[in-house]
Image (cartoon, rainbow, N blue to C red; front, side, top):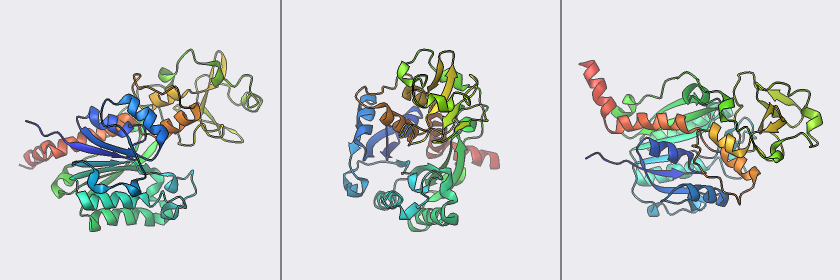
Length: 329
């Protein structure tokens, strides 16, 4: 009988990491986030283990069920190029949330971890921030870790230019040595495949004040654009630009396209699809579009996480290790 590996989903958002790990064969036993709006989206899409809404700093670690893998896309605003680069000194305390993860790891010692953050984490504060994270995991907590920056369009076959750093760790050195991040794959999907032909008129700019500012710069139906507060940016790679957490708030950053009906922004549903969420994923009707955009941009690209999860599973089941031993012999 195969062992079922149990995960906890921290900073869970709407459950993107959970979806990816469950697709890879893992079982979720606990999920936590501080955002009440996320709970609406999370709970409507999962049949069991609903989102526990609480400040993670106040969470009773002993109340968490037994688990094998800790999953955590801890808040990245404190380390983002788009943010204020405050890192651990972030005034809202978001940078320090990593240390709460460390508390849980110290208390519970799961055999594996997956942490996700913005690419800039490694270079933040001239590398000091990442050095602290690495030393905490390795020297203080005894984990062997591997890190890699993966892009959704090169590792997830999704047309979004989204680079994220992933930290995978194991208590067992052999398992860490055996682990490999997924290799690059060919991008075969086009952004146009994720765009619906008929959408509500509210997503069109044709009769809105912004239209006159953007109409001359958004002139191709084959490209994706962004309104960057004062100017239009055209994506040169032929994919959707990075979906961000502040997308939709303040009327900027939501990707914009031109259709035969005019100029419009992508809908929240389209943004979720470009993150790899299934068509069946439900978006609650009692949540504003700006909040749904935020949830989509704050989430993860599911196929990328799933490929990492599959490789973690191979190692935990010792299939990758035995294969390597065979190769050496």
